[in-house]
Image (tube, rainbow, N blue to C red; front, side, top):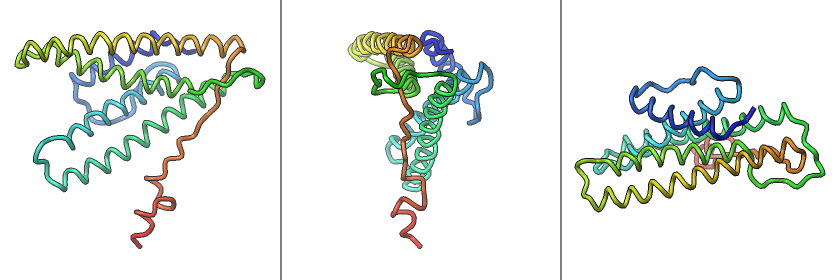
Length: 195
């Protein structure tokens, strides 16, 4: 049901494919129900990463910053919704022992962190190999890449450990709703106060 190695490989492969294909945003097909959610969640992070880069371009017009900010809010909402959907999907298929210790982070939140690491690894690898960069730049990014891979592998192990404990009935997790307010016109005074 949940395999950290499979998830990290999917994130790595999907990151490379999306950079090659530059597809328009859509749901990612394929995989079982959980892997389809994990792929869609990673895609949201991919799109969020690249949308945020657009706001960092020097001399970008204010109108583009506004467009990008709205896109970032939508993508961040989708990202968080998909984290919750992954956790709900898992919880619906589990019988957790309510007497066991509660883990502070859900599998969905860990998968989100792994997704961000996959993007950092991809882009750091590009910088470590960039021909137009200085040798110092490439060397610094080669060192960063090794650290990012170590962090990804450690976090992947933590996900497998958590999942094993959940299945063994020695650890549990619960759904933590993100309760994002910035996209809700009834909760955000910057939106509802404009009337």
